[in-house]
Image (cartoon, rainbow, N blue to C red; front, side):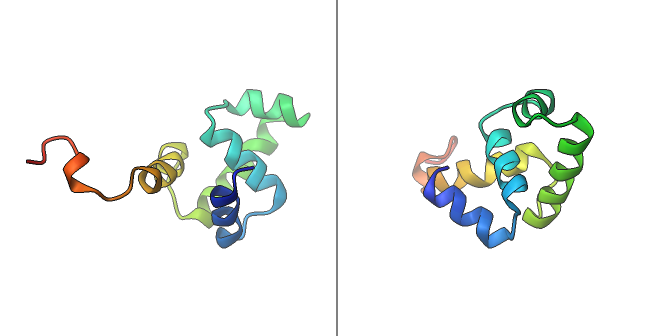
Length: 84
């Protein structure tokens, strides 16, 4: 797992399972794919997903991914669409 991502997961207090699932969600895997990879049920992955969203204080996979994309892109307003 990537260093900065892993560090953020630690700051959020994610368990090993939650961190693994969060990483796969950020990479674009579906709940079904994650369940298959982890050899568990989709219901278990959904439950862990809800717990990690709560710990990360995000509303879903888009906000979770967006958190990392925002940090990668930085806050340079010159690179934002529509800024002059």
